[in-house]
Length: 216
View 1 (tube, rainbow, N blue to C red):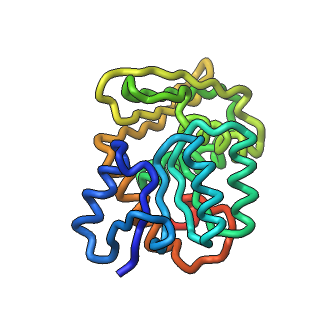
View 2 (view 1 turned 90 degrees about the horizontal axis):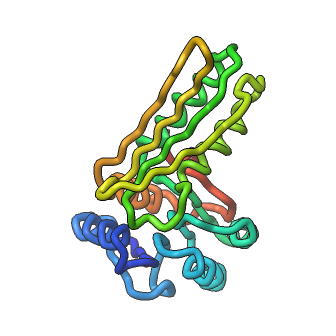
């Protein structure tokens, strides 16, 4: 049986992951990073950066789902990946993975000049705006906008009670509005994704990984 240390154990995501692992015969929760085979982090940026140093010291693979990092903090994480495997994703649901695959295919096939609006809606307790997923989607679209048909990308953020996460990407011009949408109905989908990835993180080489390295 493999062991997991959860950073942010007392938070909502930490509790969700813990509850799922209680029913998973492949893993058990441990209280220290030293005793773990893999580390999952859903906390705050300042806590994550401290954890990265510990993970480096003890050579532990690290899965990061925390959002709100500065560019300097992201660089620290990337540098740590030279020594340990780090999987950084602001949305670990398989649904978002397939959502991005469909957007990538659209960008490949599209030959019209269009603008893009990314709309994200979360619960009112979410600290960062725009969401990490929305920022990640913007970078993803920019990366795959090979023919430069998308002339601009804007992000719109909304905060509503009890919304786990809605992301909608709309491409539009005077003739068309084409939308892609993903809605999370519970935190369980993010926890399931993190645990699924954890099973593949143990024993892999150092480096920066994304969900594309684990989901198909």
